[in-house]
Length: 74
Image (cartoon, rainbow, N blue to C red; front, side, top):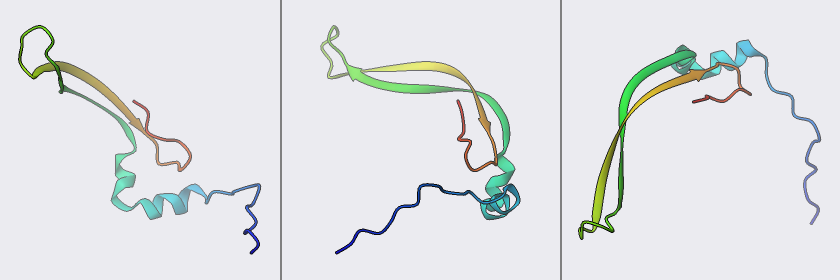
C-alpha cells in the first residue's frame, strides 16, 4: 500500500477569502485590553489543608489578526 504524497509547499488562500470564511470572528481582529484575575489551586504544604487557593489580579493585552498565518499573541 503506497503512502499518499505530501506536497512540499502549501499555499494559503488570499486574505479576502480567509476573512469571508471567518464570519463574525473577523470582527475580533484588533487589540483588546482588560483587567481580570486567575485562580490557582495548589498544595498547601504549610497550612495543613489539602489545597491553597491563590488569586492573582491581571491586566492583559490580546492582539488578533484576521490573517490566517498570524496567531493571536498575548
